[in-house]
Amino acid sequence: MLLSSLTSFRPLALECASEFIGTFVLVFLGTASIATAAYTTSDISDVASQQVALGWGFAAALATFIAAPASSAHLNPAVTLALALSPQTRSGFPKRKIPAYMLFQLLGATLAGLVVLVMFGPAIERFENRLKLVRGHSNSALSAVAFGCSFPHPQLVYGPDENSTFWSKHDVSVIGALFLEALGAMLFMLTQRVVRQPHQPSGAVAFTNSMRPRSENTQGLSPRMPDNNLSAPLYIGAAQAALTLVITPFTQACLNPARDLGPRIIAATAGWGSAEMPGVRVSYCWVYLVGPMIGALVGSLLFDMLIFPGLQTSDEAAAAWMRHQQLEGDAILEQLEKSQTLLRFNAGTRYQFCQI
Image 1 (cartoon, rainbow, N blue to C red):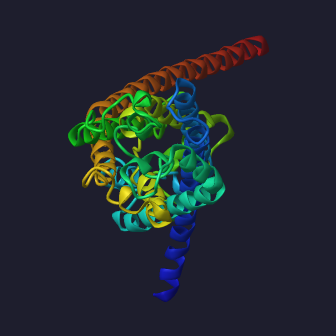
Image 2 (image 1 turned 180 degrees about the vertical axis):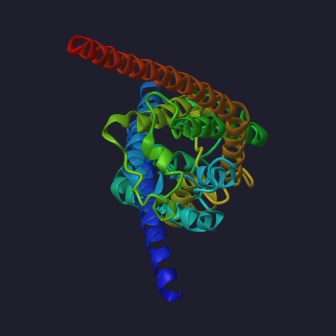
Image 3 (image 1 turned 180 degrees about the horizontal axis):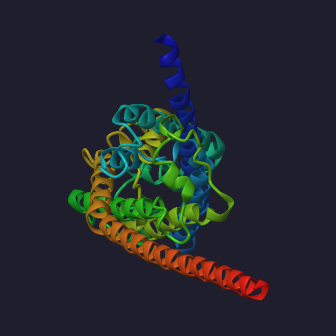
């Protein structure tokens, strides 16, 4: 009994370690790209927004590539929940793993927030001194922009003077922010589900195998990323970059509860306090937890209802074509065998005739 428990624990521990490392890479590179762009300018320019989008895109691609072999690279509690509840994937990812995956995703994101704070600490202080920001005040969300998310984007609301502000903090409502986060997570989850299917030409055998982590793989094979399917993480990164570029001005494009909550905890304990938890706007922190969860579940459901049946139809058509080709091949082989038999018979008849 004890040996069986230890045997089942070890693969889960490896999967959790993979999620921890992958989420750390994702959140560290993503939030560091925000910090690099934010603390060198006082407004959100086109260049800065593109820099952040590219940073998140490359972060998602690299983190996915790193974590896919061991844990299938969820890196997001919303993705974990959606995959665990989908009828197409839940057999390979049992619900009992949900708490462990989510915990280590949050731990990885929290560590990433801490590292970014240490790295950019002096730059953040100079930024605050230049704009006369006091941590804990409402406008200090501007100096915490690399950590927890806000809506609208703090750099559009809080500037060094009235002439540098573009939006009011009420231009994006709570319902609007919730909708945008859910919409972004839905599109991201659709991308996740599609690239995890073996039916795509670019495919992702590692992602397909990762529907059944190492401990559940009946063939005992590790879901490694094959060399000819390296495009799968790039699709994930492209989706992350595109959504970040479009949604960032409104909600900072969180799309990932761990990405928001982990760094937010660090910021709240580093002096920003209530400006980060629960946030400048009353009770808005939950938007970045609930919105991505709803969106990922809806995206996964849409895939199961609208896209997966089409893939099954394609499979059936391909199977029918293969059966047809096999029947034709069998018929050709049968004709060849008959021809060879007839040739042997004719040759034998001619030999006997010559003997007579």
